[in-house]
Length: 78
Image (cartoon, rainbow, N blue to C red; front, side, top):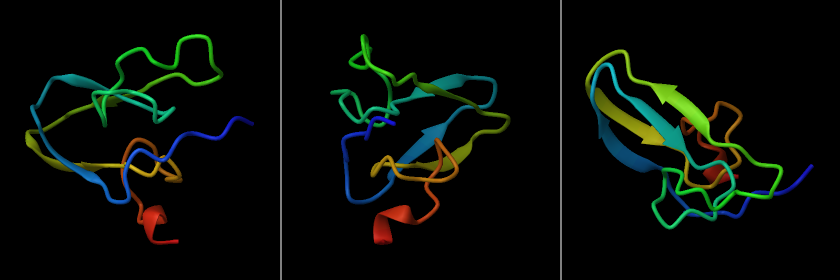
């Protein structure tokens, strides 16, 4: 399995809007972190869709090792 590039050492705190979809970068190569910009093209990676059911602040994973993509689960601390 391909290893994602670590984009950050902490999560990205993002305000999401109810009813919107967000494409989380799974490869770590996007210049628009934590969101996908298509940099994964030609790789084994695909973005993960986050569907906001309510407007709130979300912690998107930056280290790309979360067990609960696209959300941070504290894996960056390991």
